[in-house]
Every structure is written in C-alpha cells, then in structure tokens.
Image (cartoon, rainbow, N blue to C red):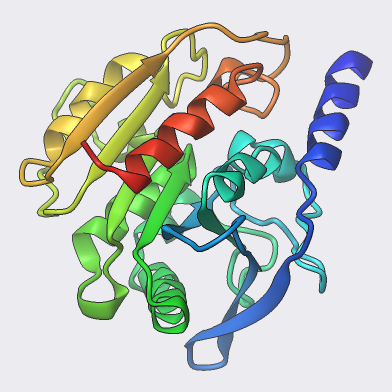
Length: 260
C-alpha cells in the first residue's frame, strides 16, 4: 500500500499543471460547475473536457488543483500528456449543488446534461476550437448521455470513453446498448486485463456498436502495465491503465487531432 501511495503521489506531483485557471461556469438557476482550464503547449488543436469516474467530486481548489482521491485516476494524473500534444485540458468537477459527488443515476439526468452542456458551450465560445469529452469509468456514462442529449453549441465535437461502466446501465448486461444517435468521432478504450466488474473489456465493443452513425469510430484494447494490487476499479489498477498512462494518453491525443 505504501508503494502504491508513493507512486500515485509521485504521478500527481509530475502532473501538476504549470498554470490553471479556476472558473465557475453557470449552468442551472443558482448552480455553477467548477472547472480548471489548463492551456496546451502552443496553439490548441482542440480542448478536452475530463470527466472522472466514481462519484465525480474533485473538490477543485481556487488554483484549479484536484483535491480528492479521484485525483489518482489516470486522466487527471497524466493530463500533461494531452497539453504537451497540443490539446487544451478542462478538468470538470461536480456542480455546486452536489459538492460531494453523485451516483450514476445523476449522470443520466437532465440536470447533469445542463451542467455538461454549459461547460462545452463556454469552452467553445471562449476558444473557438473543437471541444471533446473524455469520460473515464462512470465519466463515460456522462459522455454517452451527452452524445444522446446535447445539441447545438453544447454538443461535443467528439467523444473518448475509457474503462466505461455502461454495463450496469442495462437491465440485462448481455443485451446491446441502446443505439446512440451521434454522428461525430468516437473512440472507445479498454484494458484487456481490467478486473473491475463494472467495466469488463468484453463490453467495450458492445458500447462502440451502439454508436451506429458515429464517423469515424474506433476501438483500442490496451495490454501491459504494472497492475498494482488494490481495488480493481480504482487508480492503481489496469482499470486506470497504471504503468501505460503515456501510451493511452498519446492514443487519445492522436485521435482527437486526427480522428480515423
């Protein structure tokens, strides 16, 4: 456990942004969404909204730094690989009326879609570049529902869904995912040794198949890594691509820059 904590702390220190702008985005009446905006190295090819799993609460500081255990999730601890590749990063926290986070059901609600849509619209209007959603674990539920629900200036320009936990959104886990009428690029990523019961790698192609109109769409199944012991659904596991974060992030950046 000490080794795991030391590695995660080291990864978080290495991933600390050189600069971040903390913003509260108005979304619903009396509600704001805290975000941290981290510009890329050089001109931005696109911006990626990072949605973490679990209950989604990062407790961003006024300096835009995540302060909960979800900071160990690879999309947060390794986000510098995106900014180094010319992808601006937006770390998205839970809304002000749910500071401690929310259950997966909230990720399918109209309220959550209003929150996500407000952030997409704000980043698009401010920077004038494509805005993608990168959802990990339960964050992929948010991404999928954004594809179903959002339109116009709130509709993301592309999706990346990693270690998706969509298997429990269906009454029958063996059933297909209901079709998602999204016509933009989609990348689904899994680890072939993911031991989290909520995100079996066998479900990744099932999820991708639901995007019947997405163009282009791609599936990447990764292998390898350090596979530290611990909760198989948390940051120190294959579920969070421990040991191969740079490789996975490079694949995400490449797809965002040139979907194919």
